[in-house]
Image (cartoon, rainbow, N blue to C red; front, side):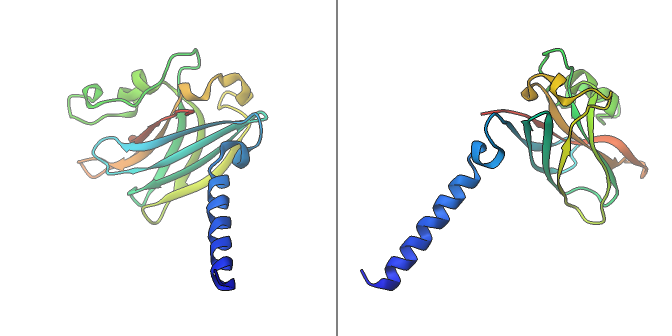
Length: 180
């Protein structure tokens, strides 16, 4: 093996090792962290999709959200759940009202009330991506009072209704969180 091949092989090995380390929760988030992930699935035929990762560590939640195919407008993003150990889940179409639209209120039996508002974002394009850290719930309680993070879901809101009005609260995507 010549010197150039050895350097390329060493470089490739370092890149693979760095990539593996980047995806190891204990490396990415520190010891004692709980990492929850979920894929955003569309609601209300929105076409919205993406990923969310929440790292629960040292009394803080770090939220990494990456959502695509959103309308260029205002969007709310929340952590929803019941806070009593009941597993929140993403609503299905059977919860929609007589008009076939799943409203914020229609989804409450499935996902529960909002517990933390992650953002109220105006976007010009179709992608919303951020990393934000929270230490309190909407009620002013420490995030450590939430219990197991995997009992919650993340809901993204905001879409134009068939009548042409924009509803900032309409659920457009939901992610069930898992800690596997």
